Length: 100
Image 1 (tube, helix red, strand yellow):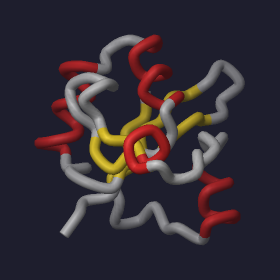
Image 2 (cartoon, rainbow, N blue to C red; image 1 turned 180 degrees about the vertical axis):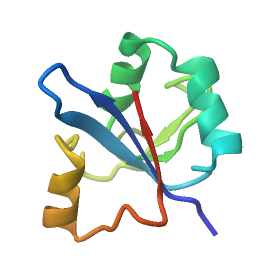
Image 3 (tube, rainbow, N blue to C red; image 1 turned 90 degrees about the vertical axis):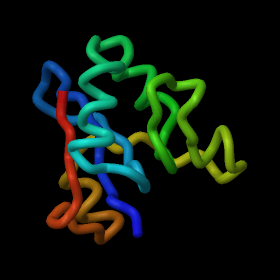
Image 4 (cartoon, one colour; image 1 turned 120 degrees about the vertical axis):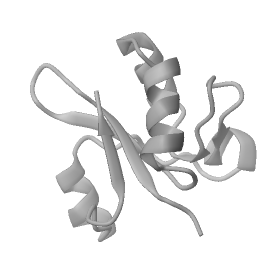
């Protein structure tokens, strides 16, 4: 079973730009990976630029993205968590959310 998560970065205007990650979203796995490897604004933005991920690893090149690695249509990066709830009927409750 997967632990779904959202990874986002807050913009100066207060909006949040974020992606979905399907696997290993726990604090022990994804939380530590983000803290250790995505610790600058540039690194977080580079990660988010790739769209939704199946799994996030220590580098963008090692991570698995639905568009780049699985040939799926590119999912636009979402602009806010509220957009996600309204447009995709996904509930953030029960999912991890990491915000930079």
